Length: 127
Ligand SMILES: [Cu+2]
Image (cartoon, rainbow, N blue to C red; front, side):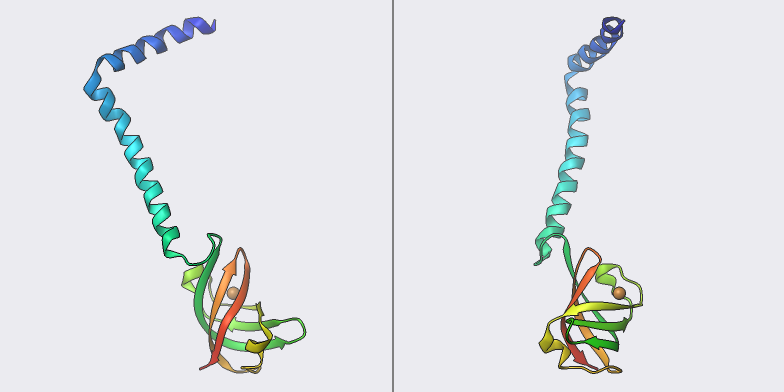
């Protein structure tokens, strides 16, 4: 049965090939779209200093907990559009030196690097 189905398909292909100009135009459009898409992707990646899966963002918030031994800080933070986060309270990893700069209850501005769903505070300062 399969060879019978193939015959009309082959016939159609030959007709398209015979119409040189139209066949070339039809073939070019999807290629252009794919090229443009790839161009946009590499453009976005070129703007990022971090690895492709890490994003940086800036936010403001209030320190609600500091865990110096665990290297964590919990912030009730506002929206961080760079990483598509709404306002929330969450714990971040943070280097010990950063944890010395602020105290529970401080209103702060901070920078985060987000990889997947995990965030690390890379800079923090009292407002
Ligand atoms: Cu968050």
